[in-house]
Image (cartoon, rainbow, N blue to C red; front, side, top):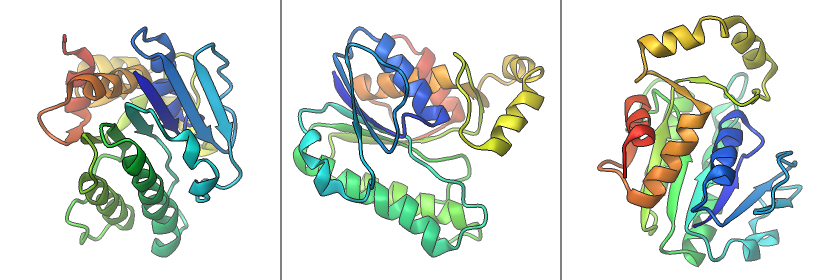
Length: 224
């Protein structure tokens, strides 16, 4: 399997990248981003671009792919809806359209979030935009597309969030997260589980296109 990852330097993206590098069925991993993921490996190729909106500049890289794991995301805090939509909906759709045109047999996995609004008309701005993005992806001519909606995530393998506030939160929560995870295994996911679940649905599919936290946990632990 040949895969491309967007957002491999973020917390979720790092977890997905590590699982792809560990998986013997994944032959080649392409990472496209504004900075290096910092995980050199024999089967990893990184393409660093200044502007991800300039899809034409890296479009030729987007061929011969079996799966795309799209883990890019920004916080909506302090942003207008127009600005957030541009960085979330517009960028994702532009990249996905190019990938779909070049790889019709590809599986596209998008990291959304718990509480995403599929109706696109709710009160919460970020949830509306994420819902619109999910809906646009599900209309594209991929072999399959899956929307991942994780909630609380426990970082493993030395992974840290790029957001300072989240890093502080994880430091404070570190002593209790493992206990909470044991108590609520279907609600609190690890970065490792999310990566394993993405690979699982890319290989074997899933009964529904939208996976909430309990579905992601099930996909990661289900035997082939």
